[in-house]
Image (cartoon, rainbow, N blue to C red; front, side, top):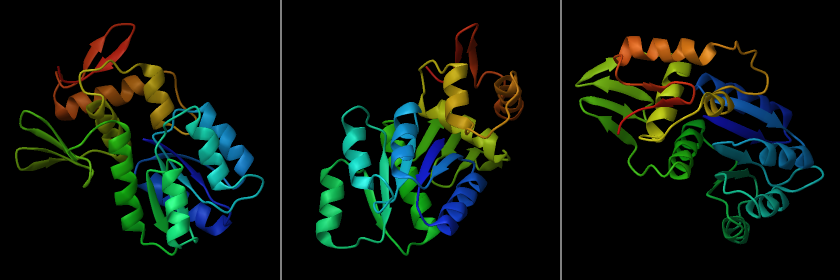
Length: 217
């Protein structure tokens, strides 16, 4: 999934970006409030991790503008820890609120939860017969046997599974799996689809020629 991280502490921004990329997320990042709003309106992010105290525009101002046009899930990550601060953020339309300092595992769990809600997926485990995609553990199993996938392969499986029964275009896949710095090849989606079929079975991903891909009914 593609995530925008907005944080004005350069060390924290770099650390979060690296940690999320290691988890398989495509990550764009910025430390400027006005740039964050422009990016958030320009790209269909699966989630935004947003600080409140930012140069140019605050996180609250960004969220207020964003909610006039989009429903992208937003997780506030901030040092502002009073009840009034939390209430203000949630009332503006934030999906979650995490106070610094924080534990990375909790941030990742909260991020997975807001992404699932954004894709209208209630159960963290998505099943296709004996195949189970555990979006909390980021693990795919057949029966009791885990299937080894790279982070990018898993990300594509999860994306298709969350869009179960719906057509997913190549453009949608590129926009959600690869960040702005990714040097992608024109046939990169085909390469990953082929790898997934080799590991999960040829019938798992169906192709609608010239339009895109889908899984399930």
